[in-house]
Length: 175
Ligand code: HEC
Image 1 (cartoon, rainbow, N blue to C red):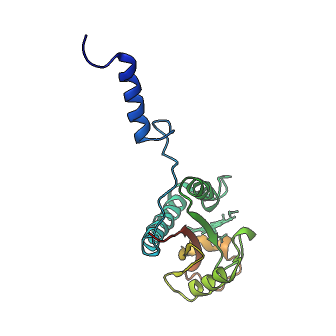
Image 2: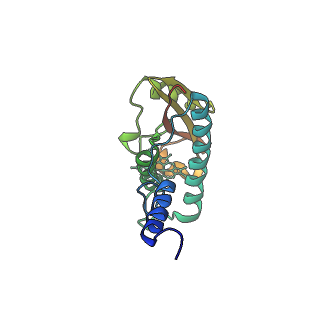
Image 3: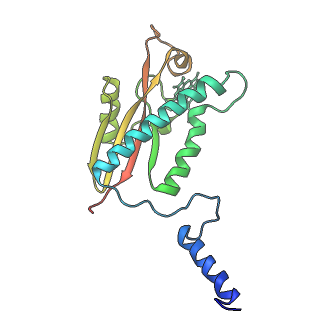
């Protein structure tokens, strides 16, 4: 028989598999560190993520959530997704209270950027951003429609839509 010995062939195939997905089992997403983004790339990613999370939350509320059935609150369930993203991709997501009462004190603004972001979103701005200390930070609005307000704003005088926020933090670097 000519060609490579079988053991060498298997080792070669194994090495090729490793080259594609270092250390990860085939059906798990690879957990390599995401390459560092520039601020402009980080802004694009943040906008895409904001739109995706915003619409996912609205769809899950409309189609899967029924009050009084002891279901998990969709915004709370999505925090599991946020945790996975942070571990896998190093991108940090957090909810931000803008209008209405704090549903969870973890969502209160914590620093100057978050306070300024809450004010900007309350004033109706489409987003608030900053790049500092190797981080790009973005805050975007999450619409609270009339059906959201009975929990988010129980003592209200009108059902006009209000706002919550999503904070996105992405590491950036020089390239
Ligand atoms: C049955 C009551 C209820 C309804 C209705 C409701 N929410 Fe919430 N919402 C909560 C609770 C409770 C939390 C806090 C969850 C946690 O602990 O993370 C929350 C948290 C949130 C947050 C995180 C920011 C914050 O204020 O704490 C967002 C964003 C959000 N909800 C969006 C919505 C949207 C959009 C709707 C309507 C489509 C909606 N919610 C309807 C109870 C409700």
